[in-house]
Image 1 (cartoon, helix red, strand yellow):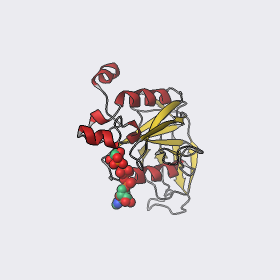
Image 2 (spheres, helix red, strand yellow):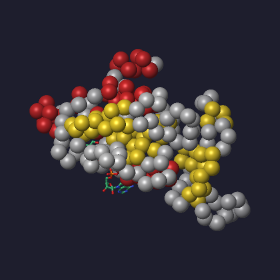
Image 3 (cartoon, helix red, strand yellow):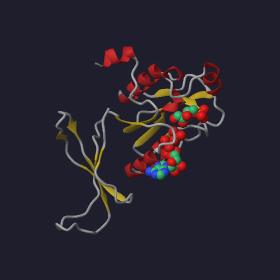
Length: 197
Ligand SMILES: Nc1ncnc2c1ncn2[C@@H]1O[C@H](COP(=O)(O)OP(=O)(O)OP(=O)(O)O)[C@@H](O)[C@H]1O
Ligand SMILES: O=C(CO)[C@H](O)[C@H](O)COP(=O)(O)O
């Protein structure tokens, strides 16, 4: 998983340039994307007062995970972030109108609620909430994020927040930047932890 470094975002009205690859202190070769505000202001030291974001943009999909509880502002923050990367974020065209996915020019945001293994009734019957690992299919989440990172499209399930049901899957193609937001983006099962480590 890669982390974008966000320095400042003064303006969403940005231009963008991509620099040559550099070596990071983690040893990865990293291409940096700079977003500049169009502001003409200069700092007290006289340098251009530009906003700057850097992010590794390899040919492989960059994955950003955002974990927070329900209602913490994940969607709001992600809408802001994807607009910085460019283009309007919209649900997949011609797909399920209740899809939780947002696609823009470079970025696809997947809501991990789609990996609930129990629908609303199922959770009620079992007496668990959506936060409970038993209410989620983390194996599928892991496999699908891994596949997207490797450039393979996946049929991702949809959890329908309107009906509380699990809807038929939607096709997700590998984007340049994949954001996974939800309750447990960093969760690995015991088996996955062993494989990962
Ligand atoms: N920085 C903020 N300051 C104050 N209110 C905020 C902030 N970010 C979001 N909100 C408000 O908090 C509410 C929840 O935000 P949002 O829907 O983005 O959260 P969420 O984590 O995606 O929720 P859920 O998991 O339920 O979808 C919204 O009404 C939103 O306008
Ligand atoms: O947003 C959530 C978690 O991120 C919801 O709490 C969870 O998906 C259950 O949804 P619902 O209350 O619509 O059945």
